[in-house]
Length: 401
Ligand SMILES: Cc1cc2nc3c(=O)[nH]c(=O)nc-3n(C[C@H](O)[C@H](O)[C@H](O)COP(=O)(O)OP(=O)(O)OC[C@H]3O[C@@H](n4cnc5c(N)ncnc54)[C@H](O)[C@@H]3O)c2cc1C
Image (cartoon, rainbow, N blue to C red; front, side, top):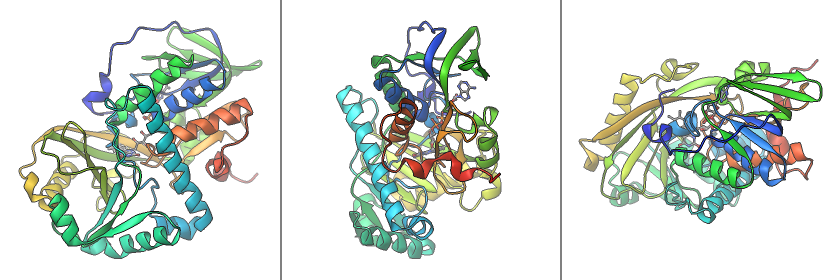
């Protein structure tokens, strides 16, 4: 995966001793795996996380870091398909997840390194998307969620945006640096007693008497439960994931540091184009897939697509002329796993007791993953279920027998 340089070289870590037995093995150290390991360790269980590269070096390291709007599907569509009650539960679940992740980053002294900026989000409309954006705004307002309409004049005067037909501002959420955030969560999991092993590719997790044996390089770890937080690569472990998760390739870039222009995060087409300005002044942007599905949909190689990179950069310069010529410092691509309802699968694999997944965030894992980790921890430890957990149950994709 061609992800950002910052996520591959986060810090030098002592190599921990990997125990031969544990309660839970978490496979994968992106934002999903680290969140699961953190919450599992907090229940008092012994936890070992095994990551084949460095923590945060998968899709998490390739992400732009946009947290709002939290849902991957436009809000009026979520209301249409799931009803207003479920749509609101999802929105509040994600908002709570952002808040609890933010609180952890603050309390562990990692907020600056993680680039935490919770100053809100913006959904902007171009003339051809104004109708959809308006509908989402109205559905959010009707649900009692705090949003303010912004006019083309507001967009021009605040961020120098041209060609926008309007948009809205969301109270809450914002952005963060995803790779360093995953490292911060892994460190918090370690502080709770989890063992975090890097450069350990889990080739197999085979069922044995009383549990599973996970084979990773020279290590063979016995555990009672195994969690696959392996994103699109979960197909190796689960037929359900192989069948249901579609890989989609996204493109990203980061500029050199620029004068402060953007605060919080921004998107068009709900979240197909996303960008934010990191605290160090770099503009980080990604997307441009909506008019090029054949170049992105079902693409599992994280290759740089020169056409899409150029289109994304040209679109940005045309929309924000003050940034022209945009000095791009870093480019990358990454693959994310999409489900048919845009929602992750979090829970036990149907028909496979003791095997759990946390995956399929459909290109929007950062607002959801932290509390999804808590869902897994309560499910495995037998603590009371997290509100809304049933919405993410993998059973919804099971084939009736
Ligand atoms: C260009 C781009 C921009 C994006 N922008 C945003 C954004 O702004 N906001 C947002 O919310 N989301 C964004 N996303 C989506 C976001 O990246 C994902 O939703 C999220 O990172 C998924 O996290 P994860 O932990 O499930 O996956 P990953 O981060 O991919 O973690 C899975 C980990 O499992 C490891 N692994 C796999 N197989 C094995 C094995 N056999 N043994 C050991 N380890 C293994 C991998 O190395 C990897 O580190 C973007 C994605 C891309 C590609």
